[in-house]
Length: 96
Image (tube, rainbow, N blue to C red; front, top):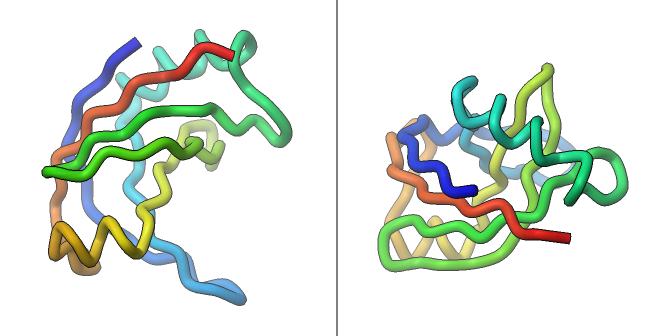
């Protein structure tokens, strides 16, 4: 399953700050349908992500009935992404 969307970069301030993009409801609904077949611990869903010239594997985190995509510091640095930027994301849910 592939999904492309645009989203705003936001920060979660915890012991270590993390940056995320919220997966929009139309993509989250499709991910949710596949999640039981691919999820591992805590509802995490493995994905491959393309953002600009960067490509990496990570997992979507379940949040508030949807999903959020964590953005690595190295990707944000390489793509010159700042807090509150709007980014174009392509993700592929990976089979378990």
